[in-house]
Amino acid sequence: MKILQFMQNKMSFGYCACIIVASLVSTSTSAQNIELANLFFTPVPLDQADLITLNAGGLAEVDRQSAADAIPRFQAEISALEEANSNDPELITQLNTLGLAQQTIDQHEDAIATFDKAAAIAVNIYGEDSLQQAPMLEQSILSHLKLNNISEITNIEEFLYELRSEQYAADSAEMYSAMTNLANWYISSYFKEGYLSQNIGFIPRLTSAQRVSRQVGVGGAGASDGSDNNINSRGNLLEAIASGNVRDVNINDVIDLRLRKLENLYEDYQDSYSGNTTLTMVVDVARRIARLSYHAKQEMDYEREGNVFDPIYNGSREEAVRNSDQRRDESYDVGKIALEYASNLVQSAEGVGAEQVALALFDLADWELAYGRVETAKEAYQATYQVFRDEGFSDASIDAAFNIGVPVAVPRIGAFPATQQTSGSLGLIQNPNYSGYIDVSFSIDELGNTNDIAIIGSSENENGRIQAILESQIKLTKFRPLLRAGELISQEPIEYRYYYSY
Image (tube, rainbow, N blue to C red; front, side, top):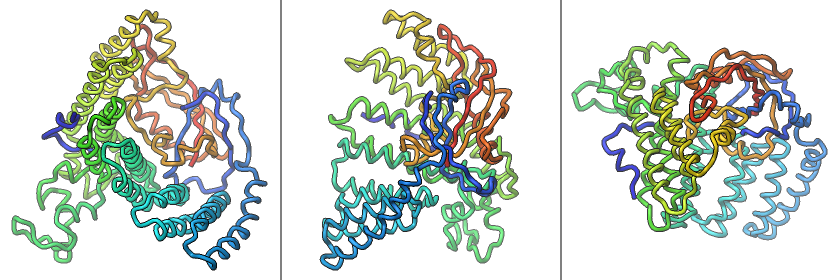
């Protein structure tokens, strides 16, 4: 069973909860200089904000002090064990405990070193390909996130994937989990370095160095056309590449490497499909393929909004390829085919309930709306309603089920910057420490576009850069309008409190 058969000869493409227990932590960091790679927002209807309990100060000071006091004792016990036997398995447990204590008091560099030491001992005892080292490496990711060590986390995630591929069958549940973990990180790091970078206005495309390396090789010899491409002898090489004088720019030159890796990851996983592969897994991969293709549209939208001047890039063939109608159309087509595949699969499977069928149709409807194909979207929303009507539900009850408290970004299966979905492992923390909040008012028209965005309040430590990111994200995100009997209805100005953490 191969979903990607339909992708042959294609271009490569690249909640909220109503009640949250959060911690409001004060900050004195300069608003414009803080690192926001781990930023994510959690929206709550403003009229429900009073239901939230804010515990000032984050982790209780008594807990932090307890961890700090325990560290010397842990270190002494570890030293004693090392003197007795440097490969004692108990050392792994003790080092892990020390690492957790160091993380508690934000000694993240020390924690990373401690977890690395524990992992090394596990390798000495159990072997280089042993999974006993995995828990320590996974725990160290939290500290790497705090230090914004994006490339280091990528290396760890890729290593963990390869480690598991040595231990588990390609069609096993363990490899499905390993695939999704690595895929989720690729998306997370892509957003962190592309949309949340301190390099304001950064466009998530290849860097100049990457373009040189891929097209002519750093310091490489002449191209096949006989031209001299040696970097030392050609001072304006980057401009020549950007304008297409070295060779024609193709789609693989202009998308983020992580998106290309994602496509290969999904293809490799599909090659492993067998009788052990469940309907849920197949449908999930199809939706992931659609999400991957949607990033092309996101890049185009954000680049247009950012309008960053780059004399090498503006007017180049690279810019033309990245923002071409062909790329956008390919993005739409690939995602739609993937979602149609998933929908057909769900509808043809035995024992599938109306809710699963409706969600699959909803994905298609949201996809059409995200690309501005309104009439097709309306037909798909009506088809979704009909599934529940056939089960005896009234339109009023269906409306109530679909119109939840917080507006849903479309496509529903998409990934968006500054959300828990793309915040890395920090987003998995059940009660993250929120640093503040911003109150926003905006309206949603019947096409899902946002209008009249206004900041109406904030916590005392609110800063301009986070506000700008939030406003941009709301502006460039389409939301599902109100649904009334399957019809799309605009929403008058609505007010939300966006708690943020970084």
